[in-house]
Image 1 (cartoon, helix red, strand yellow):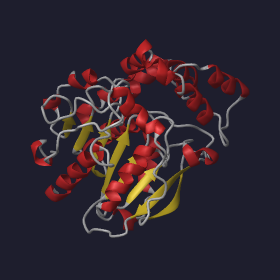
Image 2 (spheres, helix red, strand yellow):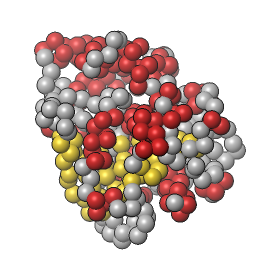
Image 3 (cartoon, helix red, strand yellow):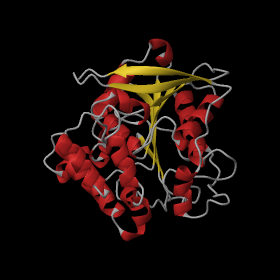
Length: 339
């Protein structure tokens, strides 16, 4: 069972200038340059060879804190759609955890970021086997105190599916998600609404560049299909669902939606959402009966303390560190202290 919301002792989230409003909070992740190196902490490249005969390898970055602390688990960070180890939110979260003595793994999913050149195939929400394989390959010296995981957006959806699949047999001590889409079908339809036209001005281009980059083993027909995809719906229906054995986009979304896996999660899991997220409506979270699974702790705009604002993977408030990193750090500390 996770710690209580009150025990996290979180300050209210207050957006800071100039990131006022849901869209500016969201765009801040795209407009801000990556934080660069994590000095004085150090980083080392790691490879995770997949065992599915594809020959693919996932790449990651192991970050070692300048001042390690005894007790904290290894923190594994999973990026969102078209993200990577160098995404703004990944580096922010890594620095926060490193500053508090955690070792951190920033994992690139199959075909993402620096993994692209070493992968013939590509990631999608349902590809939890890749994450399971990467965890199994971690050296024991890093996992002696266990593993905690954080998933952002799509990475959060994948993490929730993984947790539900493994149930009480999961190897994780704790988990957290930030703005994870938990109802894929409804979420995609929401993204297609006119109010999100701005995001569709850049998202398909990023998807195409990522899916067809160096290393991708696509037929010419598949490349043409990707290039013709002008929306997230087109991309998931014509490329992801078609190439990975699903009977259309409805089948893909039905099988992989985290909502169906939430009841089976047994690892203490923090689920952070923003009331004004333009990508993932908080109403999808409100519809789940949280009382049915005591392992889940939703940080939603349901109580005065919790965020009615924050955008999508934003939470840019007072100080340089996103409010979400503070919430995750305190949650992990409480889980570890109760173990």
